[in-house]
Amino acid sequence: MARKQKLELTWIGKEKRSKLEPRVLVEEQPIRSAGRSAEGPPRLDDNLLIKGDNLLALKALESDYIGKVKCVYIDPPYNTKSAFNFFNDGVEHSIWMSLFVDRIKIIRRLLSEDGSIWISLDDNESHYAKVLCDEIFGRRNFVSNVIWQKLYTVKNSSRYLSDMHEHILVYAKNKSAWKPNLVPRSENAQRSYTNPDNDPRGRWTTNAIQARNYYSEGSYEISSPAGRVFVPPSGTYWRVSEETFNRLDADDRIWWGSSGSSTPRVKKFLFEAKDGVVPSTLWKHEEVGTNAEAKAESRALFADKGGVFDTPKPERLIQRVLQLASNPDDLVLDSFAGSGTTGAVAHKMGRQWIMIELGEHADTHIIPRLNKVIDGDDSGGVTGETGWQGGGGYRYFHLAPSLLEKDQWGQYVISKEFKPEMLAEAVCKLMGFTYAPSQVHFWQHGHSTETDFIYVTTQRLTHDALRKLSDEVGDDRTLLICCRAHEPNRFDNLTVRKIPQAVLDKAEWGRDDYSLNIQDAPAEPITEADLDDTAATTE
Image (cartoon, rainbow, N blue to C red):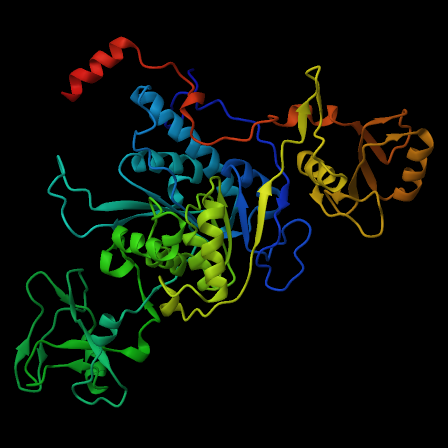
């Protein structure tokens, strides 16, 4: 019998996955640490800005932040074809999908059980991304495809249809555990509540009392105070039984109009309403902003930095995402930080945040922007609506170099840039241990359980040194020792491995860039025949 195959999207190079090195994060000169000690590895309550390849940075976060992130918003490259002049369509999509899927798999592991991811895309790849996310998250965890109206004027120069929207794909880590917040009630929605009859219970609006769904007790006559008789319109039924209707009417919860002869409607008082409204899948420009608004915000922030950032998102759009998907003090992640909008909005809304940015934007745009937010000098975006006045802080990290480098004979050795504490942290990550150096026991650099520890050293350990370690570890604990060299180990509570040999096969060494790069395309360039075909189809 043939093996049953699963439904999946395939592409060139799908099965070729890199062995990522879990890099150490190295702190830059502290910038805005909010008056706290800012030393050592990141703490779970730190706001973090990380400069470096975002795939490597996500891998660096994985061991400490798995299951900790409540909301992820990402705005990945849209694949506008500008980088693919020399590759055919199949290769183009393959590169983009490989870029996308590697990151989404790690992000899923970082999400908490009640967390969600929001992905901004345009029509170039949104539908491929939907199928990929179905495969990674499971179709049962798809929440919605939000349509954002990024423009409100038609481009008459458009060749076919004027592009006025983008997509935001929404997935939950576990849809049964994820509960979105409501959208705060707008001023227009508030104004719909009035009190024309001076009801002592306050302002109210009305709901129709008829519905199309069949209701066995929903067919009866109703008489208005003015004597007019009503029956449900054809094909509809009253929503409530006659007994319930009479009770509502006696409680002055039925509105007959100012003349007392209008079709009855049920009062819904403002004090009984939810704190917000259920969000829709259509986000209009007047609610969450436009591209033009985002660029205006960018100009105000970066006029002295060489101009407008190319593809910003309006702060109101990010605010809507964070309103629905997070609460104060929740952790928000953006691994394609760009100009830093997500972190800036998260900061103003009282969320904890992590941003990752590969390019120089981290220095030229994000840091100045965050400093303005913290100093209370950013008056734009959602500052007024959130009541933000400044405060807080963050820490700035870059990725350490690869742990191993090749010497003059082509053999892997430990990088000269690694200090002892960096080496210990790197080996902990590679060996699956939590880096937590003890202040009491020099040999406790990390742990995998409460009784299993790791010790990393560049020394050569003699039999006497191993014996002393064994005695201190004791019978109730175990210790993995990673060292440069050692004499034979005869102690049951010790496991001794040589470095770098112990980690050689655990990662791809020396690679610092996993970004979209057509030079690494996993296929052949276009042939002359392909070019002829392309020319024929574009004339």
